[in-house]
Image 1: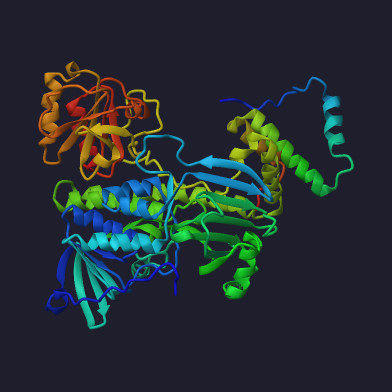
Image 2 (image 1 turned 180 degrees about the horizontal axis):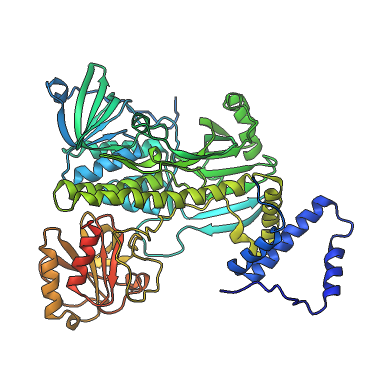
Amino acid sequence: MSTLIIEPNLPRPDDFYQTLTDLHRDLSDEQSMDVNARLILLLSNHIGDQAVLEQAMAIAREHIPAAE
Amino acid sequence: MFKTYTFPEFDYVRSADQDTAQPVKHPVVIVGAGPMGMTAAVDLAQQGVPVVILDDNNTVSVGSRAVCYAKRFLDISDRLGVGQRIVDKGVTWNIGKVFLEEDHIYSFNMLPEEHHRRPGFINLQQYYLEEYYVDRINSLDTADLRWKNKLVNVEQQGDSVLLSIETPEGPYQLEAQYVIACDGANSKVRAMCGLESKGQIFQDRFLIADVIMDPKKFPPERWFWFNPPFHSGQSTLLHRQADNVWRIDFDLGWDADPEEEKKPENIIPRVKAFLGDDVEFDLEWASVYTFTCRRMDEFRQGNIFFAGDAAHQVSPFGARGANSGIEDTDNLCWKLKMVLDGKAPVTLLDSYSPERTFAADENILNSTRSTDFITPKNHVSRVFRDAVLNLSRNYTFARPLVNSGRLSVPPFLTESALNTADTEMFNCKVVPGAPCTDGSIVYNAEDDFLLSNLGNQFNGLLFVESHTDLTADILQGLTELAVQDVPVKTFVVASHEMELNLPEGSEMVIDKYGVVKERLDAQRGTFYLTRPDQLVTARMRRFDKEQIVAAQNKALGK
């Protein structure tokens, strides 16, 4: 089974981060949500591995207590 | 009044069972003469099991209701002798198109392969389907369809069931060895047994309007619109049925008032907005509905079996209602026949509920996912849904995520206790627990189809490429299989025309295009065993009579 990479893997982290935040500059919250949704869909398709995606999804909300 | 259809009225006929002091006992009584009750009746009666069907009404389904009948429904109806009439009257389609706003974004094909007798789907108003099944029942001496016979009580008594019935001429009682409850979503039998169907109610309302219009306007395809310009923010589905009747299905949202929406003065403007002012149409029938996805925990209580909507319900997106219901009766009837004939232990009947609840779960899952895509349940779901739709205009990767209904295909009963697990590698879609594939063949020097010749009994498929493949041992084995208490009739699937000396009970079919071999990943010597409902139950790379008998015993619940 493939494993989600959780060690540093971006060759130029600062460039990536700036590109990501620039992507949302001047967008309303609603537009940002739409852009993020499209980005998640594009990246998920690129990864193409349900197990890896599920690991990422679990980590993405592990800090939020489970609903009662 | 319908412009395109006249509803038959069937006569109540007094039965001799109403004049006896003691309730008369029947092997099988079916409650409800809807599509499922009637398929069960035909299936049993044509195999010689006498059946009584009780229905509290005296006509067919009012309103069109079920529309889409899938390939598997047609294959089963062929076995029941009704398939050709349904196909002749119905509208054949294979293509579904998805639109977003004004744009066509995606198409799918329900039958991308050739060499199947039946198409992916046909559309037909439910009343025609029921009428054809009534005719078929009336042609069978062993089926007794009793109109205006209303079931008012059921009581399990040891190994049989006592039914209390009201008729226009007063009450009477019947005893049944087995009861099949096909009395629909609000099943009274289920309520009388103190059982429930549990699941999820969807907070949404849909308007269905059947309209008559010129057939040149739309091709025979399934068209689905997300957020169409004529019905802003919602969805719309279009299907063509027989007699130039189109089914239009509008999502109205939860706040719509069903009584108001049902009025023609409110429906006609919606349809006009859709078709344009220049298209003439007549409104044939309309209804506003909500739906639930739910099922019973078990589809059996004692000697009572539940089938169709009585046992499980799905949303209409996916056409999984009637199409899964007929798979229930297809699954149950051969088992009842075997047990009633004393050829299988009564424990064979234990396999019905696990096999069909497994199938129901797959149908409910697919139907729920489609519904959640079509009408997103919260803001973020809608954001993702809209992102998928908008990306799918230009990016093919998003198109498989578009879900306007995953249309009915038979669930593969991979977990069934009746299956014999593969011990060798097979690389094809068909697996133990799946219906056998169809394919063009030559049989008795005529073009034919494989599925038209399978079923009602156990069948074998043995693949050969030369007469030398049939050794004396194999011929001896085929003979022995054919004369068992529960025979296996084997079709020797020849790769080309050849001279074969086959024993009684075996016949040759020619796999003219090689499609059967390919679809079953068969090689020289491969053997498939199918159940009386055409499901593959075991397969092996070399003919081994002992293994075949063991697999058949397993499939008989022994």
